[in-house]
Length: 134
Image (cartoon, rainbow, N blue to C red; front, side):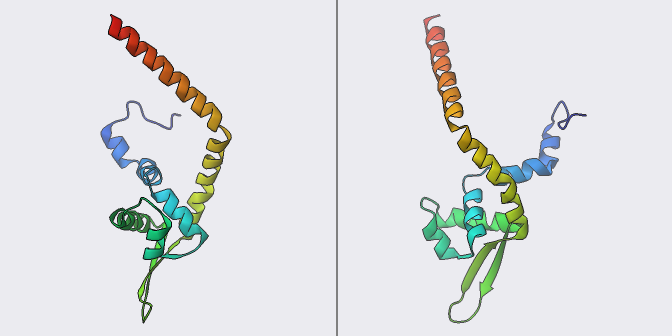
């Protein structure tokens, strides 16, 4: 039995919960933010300072999306030190348990991946040059 129906329709892809969550995991900032929050809780401003190149607007969107998916919790702090604290949930940590081995695999095979990319890019460049001569 195939895991993927053939042909894969737009409706199939849109209805797939795996694709939906993998798009979250695969975005530019979510895994980094989740990994930080798995180490300890952070206030918004702390997170903003902890990740260079991440705008406050995108940080807000990322945190909201992670919270919506149940991967991050948001707790309001009352009183003089009012603010918000974010932390990874048990669900978020359990997802990281699956993603970390993938990252380790990438690091183990980094040289092979880079060699394959270089070979592909060189071959593509050669094909373009030959096509230009035709």
